[in-house]
Length: 183
Image 1 (cartoon, helix red, strand yellow):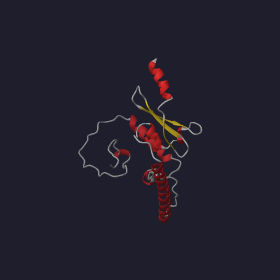
Image 2 (tube, helix red, strand yellow):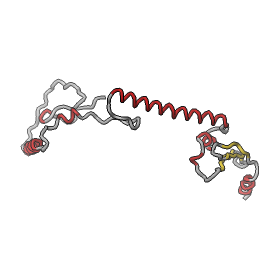
Image 3 (cartoon, helix red, strand yellow):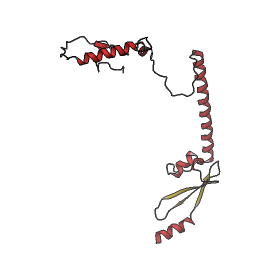
Protein backbone atom coordinates (compact mmCIF):
# COMPACT_ATOMS: atom_id res chain seq x y z
CA UNK A 1 0.00 0.00 0.00
CA UNK A 2 2.88 2.32 0.72
CA UNK A 3 4.26 1.81 -2.80
CA UNK A 4 0.93 2.83 -4.28
CA UNK A 5 0.81 5.91 -2.06
CA UNK A 6 4.39 6.80 -3.02
CA UNK A 7 3.50 6.61 -6.73
CA UNK A 8 0.40 8.76 -6.30
CA UNK A 9 2.33 11.32 -4.26
CA UNK A 10 5.15 11.24 -6.84
CA UNK A 11 2.74 12.31 -9.56
CA UNK A 12 2.29 15.66 -7.83
CA UNK A 13 5.90 16.42 -6.99
CA UNK A 14 9.27 16.53 -8.66
CA UNK A 15 7.78 16.92 -12.13
CA UNK A 16 10.17 18.91 -14.31
CA UNK A 17 9.50 20.50 -17.68
CA UNK A 18 12.16 19.41 -20.19
CA UNK A 19 11.14 21.08 -23.44
CA UNK A 20 8.62 21.49 -26.24
CA UNK A 21 8.68 20.67 -29.93
CA UNK A 22 7.57 22.66 -32.99
CA UNK A 23 3.99 21.33 -32.81
CA UNK A 24 3.56 22.42 -29.19
CA UNK A 25 3.85 19.05 -27.47
CA UNK A 26 5.43 19.38 -23.99
CA UNK A 27 7.89 16.88 -22.52
CA UNK A 28 8.36 16.14 -18.81
CA UNK A 29 10.42 13.87 -16.59
CA UNK A 30 10.70 12.94 -12.93
CA UNK A 31 12.82 10.59 -10.85
CA UNK A 32 11.00 7.69 -9.29
CA UNK A 33 12.08 7.21 -5.68
CA UNK A 34 11.04 3.56 -5.62
CA UNK A 35 12.48 2.41 -8.96
CA UNK A 36 15.33 4.97 -8.99
CA UNK A 37 14.62 5.43 -12.65
CA UNK A 38 13.74 8.51 -14.62
CA UNK A 39 10.19 8.51 -16.01
CA UNK A 40 9.61 10.49 -19.21
CA UNK A 41 6.33 11.45 -20.88
CA UNK A 42 4.70 13.83 -23.30
CA UNK A 43 1.63 16.03 -22.95
CA UNK A 44 0.10 16.56 -26.37
CA UNK A 45 -0.99 20.03 -27.43
CA UNK A 46 -4.10 18.86 -29.26
CA UNK A 47 -5.33 15.29 -29.51
CA UNK A 48 -3.05 12.39 -28.67
CA UNK A 49 -1.36 11.74 -32.01
CA UNK A 50 1.92 9.81 -31.61
CA UNK A 51 2.83 10.56 -35.22
CA UNK A 52 3.22 14.24 -34.33
CA UNK A 53 6.25 13.52 -32.13
CA UNK A 54 9.62 14.17 -33.84
CA UNK A 55 12.08 11.27 -33.99
CA UNK A 56 14.58 12.94 -31.68
CA UNK A 57 11.97 13.33 -28.95
CA UNK A 58 10.85 9.71 -29.42
CA UNK A 59 14.44 8.62 -28.82
CA UNK A 60 14.57 10.73 -25.66
CA UNK A 61 11.23 9.33 -24.42
CA UNK A 62 12.43 5.75 -24.96
CA UNK A 63 15.72 6.39 -23.17
CA UNK A 64 17.88 6.07 -26.28
CA UNK A 65 19.13 9.62 -25.67
CA UNK A 66 20.33 10.84 -22.30
CA UNK A 67 19.85 14.52 -23.08
CA UNK A 68 16.72 16.02 -24.60
CA UNK A 69 17.11 17.61 -28.05
CA UNK A 70 17.71 21.36 -28.03
CA UNK A 71 15.82 23.79 -30.28
CA UNK A 72 19.07 24.52 -32.17
CA UNK A 73 19.62 20.81 -32.80
CA UNK A 74 16.03 20.40 -33.99
CA UNK A 75 16.46 23.34 -36.39
CA UNK A 76 19.68 21.86 -37.81
CA UNK A 77 18.05 18.46 -38.28
CA UNK A 78 14.99 19.98 -40.00
CA UNK A 79 17.28 21.91 -42.37
CA UNK A 80 19.21 18.70 -43.10
CA UNK A 81 15.98 16.81 -43.85
CA UNK A 82 14.97 19.54 -46.32
CA UNK A 83 18.39 19.34 -48.04
CA UNK A 84 18.02 15.56 -48.36
CA UNK A 85 14.54 15.95 -49.91
CA UNK A 86 15.89 18.48 -52.41
CA UNK A 87 18.83 16.20 -53.28
CA UNK A 88 16.48 13.25 -53.85
CA UNK A 89 14.28 15.35 -56.14
CA UNK A 90 17.36 16.57 -58.04
CA UNK A 91 18.69 13.02 -58.47
CA UNK A 92 15.31 11.77 -59.75
CA UNK A 93 15.20 14.63 -62.26
CA UNK A 94 18.77 13.90 -63.46
CA UNK A 95 17.93 10.21 -63.84
CA UNK A 96 14.86 11.02 -65.94
CA UNK A 97 16.91 13.37 -68.15
CA UNK A 98 19.59 10.69 -68.57
CA UNK A 99 16.99 8.11 -69.62
CA UNK A 100 15.44 10.63 -72.03
CA UNK A 101 18.85 11.29 -73.62
CA UNK A 102 19.48 7.56 -74.02
CA UNK A 103 16.18 7.29 -75.84
CA UNK A 104 14.60 4.50 -73.87
CA UNK A 105 11.23 6.15 -74.26
CA UNK A 106 10.23 5.11 -70.77
CA UNK A 107 9.68 7.48 -67.90
CA UNK A 108 10.91 6.35 -64.52
CA UNK A 109 8.04 6.29 -62.08
CA UNK A 110 10.00 4.96 -59.14
CA UNK A 111 13.60 4.09 -58.42
CA UNK A 112 14.43 0.61 -57.24
CA UNK A 113 12.25 -1.50 -59.51
CA UNK A 114 14.16 -3.77 -61.86
CA UNK A 115 13.29 -4.21 -65.49
CA UNK A 116 11.56 -7.38 -66.60
CA UNK A 117 13.52 -10.35 -67.94
CA UNK A 118 14.73 -10.48 -71.53
CA UNK A 119 12.40 -12.99 -73.21
CA UNK A 120 13.56 -12.87 -76.84
CA UNK A 121 15.68 -16.03 -76.56
CA UNK A 122 12.83 -17.77 -74.74
CA UNK A 123 10.27 -16.88 -77.40
CA UNK A 124 12.54 -18.20 -80.20
CA UNK A 125 12.00 -21.76 -78.91
CA UNK A 126 8.28 -21.64 -79.68
CA UNK A 127 6.96 -22.52 -83.15
CA UNK A 128 5.70 -19.71 -85.35
CA UNK A 129 2.37 -21.53 -85.79
CA UNK A 130 -0.10 -19.72 -83.55
CA UNK A 131 -2.62 -22.58 -83.38
CA UNK A 132 -0.16 -24.94 -81.73
CA UNK A 133 -0.95 -27.96 -83.98
CA UNK A 134 2.73 -28.88 -84.21
CA UNK A 135 3.09 -28.74 -80.46
CA UNK A 136 0.08 -31.03 -80.01
CA UNK A 137 1.52 -33.53 -82.51
CA UNK A 138 4.86 -33.52 -80.73
CA UNK A 139 3.08 -34.05 -77.43
CA UNK A 140 1.17 -37.06 -78.83
CA UNK A 141 4.39 -38.59 -80.19
CA UNK A 142 6.06 -38.14 -76.82
CA UNK A 143 3.13 -39.82 -75.07
CA UNK A 144 3.30 -42.78 -77.48
CA UNK A 145 7.04 -43.18 -76.97
CA UNK A 146 6.53 -43.33 -73.20
CA UNK A 147 4.11 -46.22 -73.58
CA UNK A 148 6.74 -48.33 -75.37
CA UNK A 149 9.04 -50.42 -73.28
CA UNK A 150 12.12 -48.51 -72.17
CA UNK A 151 15.56 -50.02 -72.56
CA UNK A 152 18.27 -49.00 -70.13
CA UNK A 153 20.53 -46.43 -71.72
CA UNK A 154 24.26 -46.81 -71.72
CA UNK A 155 25.86 -43.58 -70.58
CA UNK A 156 29.12 -42.72 -72.26
CA UNK A 157 31.57 -40.13 -71.09
CA UNK A 158 31.04 -37.15 -73.32
CA UNK A 159 32.92 -33.90 -73.06
CA UNK A 160 30.95 -31.41 -70.98
CA UNK A 161 28.88 -28.98 -72.95
CA UNK A 162 29.95 -25.36 -72.66
CA UNK A 163 27.97 -23.42 -70.10
CA UNK A 164 25.68 -20.85 -71.60
CA UNK A 165 23.46 -18.19 -70.13
CA UNK A 166 20.40 -19.61 -71.87
CA UNK A 167 18.99 -23.14 -71.61
CA UNK A 168 19.49 -25.14 -74.76
CA UNK A 169 18.49 -28.51 -76.08
CA UNK A 170 15.17 -30.10 -76.76
CA UNK A 171 13.80 -33.54 -77.49
CA UNK A 172 16.33 -36.35 -77.20
CA UNK A 173 19.26 -34.12 -76.23
CA UNK A 174 17.41 -32.71 -73.21
CA UNK A 175 18.78 -33.88 -69.88
CA UNK A 176 17.01 -32.74 -66.72
CA UNK A 177 19.16 -31.00 -64.16
CA UNK A 178 22.12 -30.28 -66.44
CA UNK A 179 21.54 -26.60 -67.06
CA UNK A 180 22.57 -24.23 -64.29
CA UNK A 181 21.80 -20.51 -64.29
CA UNK A 182 24.82 -18.22 -64.56
CA UNK A 183 26.20 -17.16 -61.22
